[in-house]
Length: 130
Image (cartoon, rainbow, N blue to C red; front, side, top):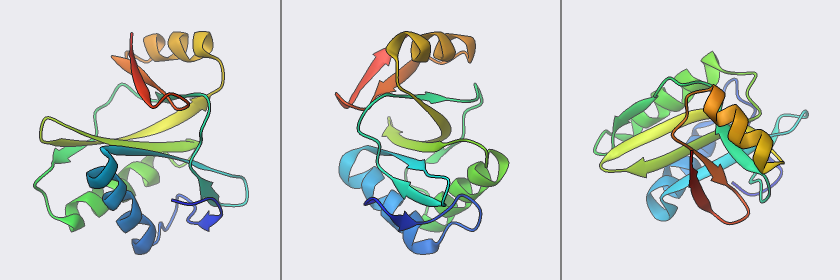
């Protein structure tokens, strides 16, 4: 999702969800962050930390409509999150409401408190196992 694309969490446009779907299958995942004006951007620094220990998943073979329903469900339930992350692993799509945290130590502590297995380093594009 290029910077400045208007999406907002509530009422996420189908074209925005389609872009996330493409990023998931082309790049293995995505992280987007909302701004106060409702636009979204791809963050390039900091760490993505899920705000909940709950898993939000569907099989990778599920149709686009199921993916869109999952994204809308997560964004409706966690509309206060400043980010959304998704990734594909072992035939499963994961969608998480995330907080973008700038300092690694703070992100690591938050991830452990939220019972996460890992956080994601946005600058390096790598997972950090906790």
